[in-house]
Amino acid sequence: MEYKIVDRAEDPMDSKIEKLGVVVKFSMREIEADINAFNKLIKELTATVDYNAAKMANIETYHPFVTTMSEEDLFTAHMYQDAKAIVKVGKDKMAEVQKALDDYVVEKADINSQIPDLMTPAQPAEVAAAPAEEAAQVDAPADGSVAVSSPVEGAIPTLPEFMPGAGNGPEAAQ
Image (cartoon, rainbow, N blue to C red; front, side):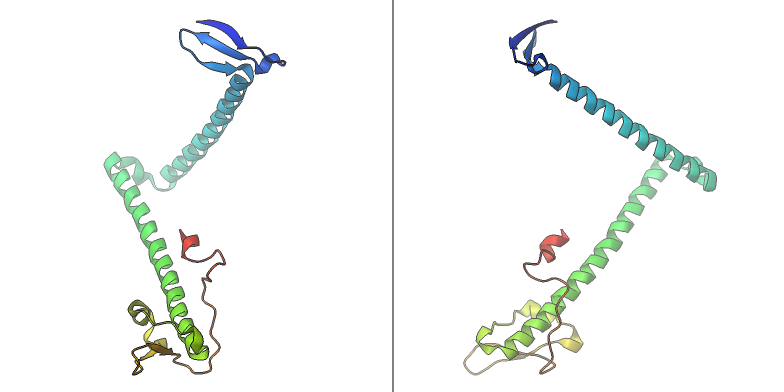
């Protein structure tokens, strides 16, 4: 390969160099930065490998049956464990979100009963989502509008776990 300076900078480290045969422009500072990044990556990889090798040795010492398992069995057990963890977290999160939804349905009913000029119609999903013991009563007035009243008149609405605009609603759960 042949090299030549194509853009001389005041600081020689910043001068652009052309590699002939293949046109690639770079500076010595960029090469230096790449070398530093590679050295850092080697340190991180070494630490990760050493940590996991020690973890494997510990598992092999206290659970020697893993050394007799086939790669397929190890992989299958790993996939099962990952799926099991995701299912548990997912079910917990679903329950948490359902509770927040239930709280919103009750709170919306309370607001509608206390501030009629903000009256909003109950959505079928909201009525179905409300817990049986806290389900809002849906009344159908003669004019065709939908009125929602709180199951506990005069109760102070409790704030749901997720508040709109507070950065902790469903969008934050993702």
